[in-house]
Image (cartoon, rainbow, N blue to C red; front, side, top):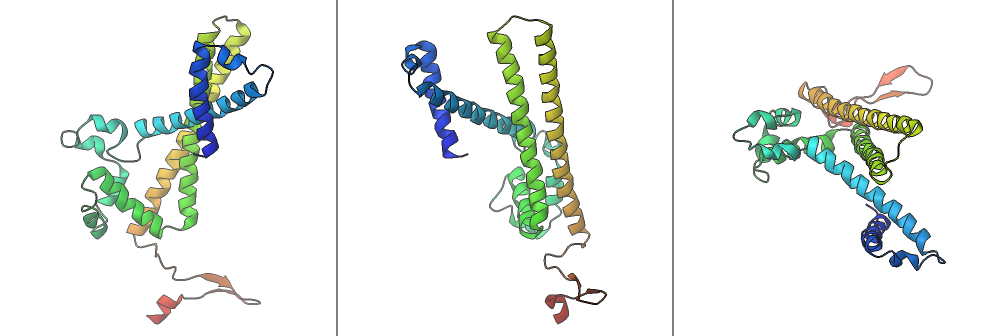
Length: 235
């Protein structure tokens, strides 16, 4: 999070409660740029709060770790099936990587995350890692956007209770946008998980090599050729 966002969040936390108790806190800025500054700062602060809300919802309901989020309510020793996910299943098949991870990470969830993330981020191509990361970011952004819309609608209902047909239509449209935004983010998360599973599946079937073996190139004025890498040529 950028420092300017943190500063805006600080200003929002400082001035908003104070002005609610004593309107003169901001009244002094009527003839100065203070209100404009506070408005911009408050908007950035609200955005930071909503971004944090999106991450909090993600970590609570869709935790990255098999032992995180809502799963913490259920002890692993009594509810082992609740803590099972694809990373745990993959990690337990990684042989020495899984065994070594037991020393620094005795907790099952951390052990699964560390062992699988180590392989993914040390062996997978940068394009694959970026593809996965972008979809995780889309999921987080979608949660924040959906939270912003829903909280805005609820706040408007609480502050201004007057209703008419036009307002009802707008509320329905906004809620529909929030649902569609969330659905889009959820699909992006599913794609990122599918890519991780696919990469590990290829690796398990020995279809991947951390050292690319056969770069494909087109020689000038020649047919398509396959040049063996130096590591394979030595063998």
